[in-house]
Length: 277
Ligand code: AMP
Ligand code: MN
Ligand code: MN
Ligand code: MN
Picture 1 (cartoon, helix red, strand yellow):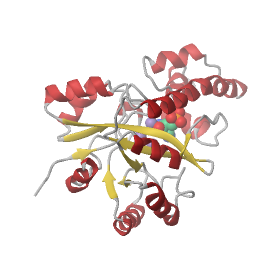
Picture 2 (tube, rainbow, N blue to C red; picture 1 turned 180 degrees about the vertical axis):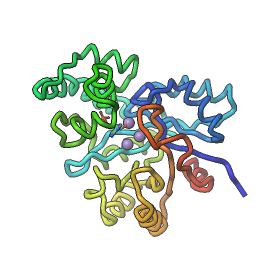
Picture 3 (cartoon, rainbow, N blue to C red; picture 1 turned 90 degrees about the vertical axis):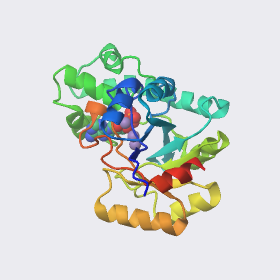
């Protein structure tokens, strides 16, 4: 029996995780993982460093990325695996998303200022370091550093959550267009935490079935911290019915997110093989 431990959803400091790609690979080995996917938000920039570190430490790296998409006004995250990271169309779209991330920082800081919390763009950029993908977690970190909240969780709960007092929309790709772009780049497309709070309403079974039928959606992330046991059961049954891949992963962000330790959820080796085929 194949007992490899496989974690297919993690973030480095190239997006909103706190470990560099190399540190992440070392921690993955320590956590007893045999396979890890690095899936930074809207960028491939961490993959080269991760690949070199993975090679040194003997862990298998699956190249990945978590793409910001939307459906009917709701945010949906799409995991892409095994794609050509040089694909021009996909890279142009990711660039557009990253510009949207940069452009959103100013308006969020204005909202925060209106709420009595002054932080500067420089303070946010200091937290983002050389991340390619700047995001709300970096704004949260700047609020922590300024002593205005205790941690990222409080920053999101009070101010930054979707629809929250300091939340500002940003550019994302329409979901089915994103699936098509990932496929055109030779990758597999798996919807991340589909029934988390933000996307559950817009992704009922019949919509997921249509994405499989019309866009050859490859899989769903079933085992994830955002899904309770009953949700995971229902989603797993749906993947069986639709004959698509079911994955399970940690969505590790280093110190940036509690309860997402490496390997806390893993993917069945048989499902991983399907992802590679
Ligand atoms: P953005 O990518 O800028 O839209 O911000 C969304 C990111 O914020 C997600 O990828 C999560 O990693 C992170 N996030 C959302 N809620 C929380 C929370 N309560 N605590 C820590 N991080 C969070
Ligand atoms: Mn994140
Ligand atoms: Mn996500
Ligand atoms: Mn993620």
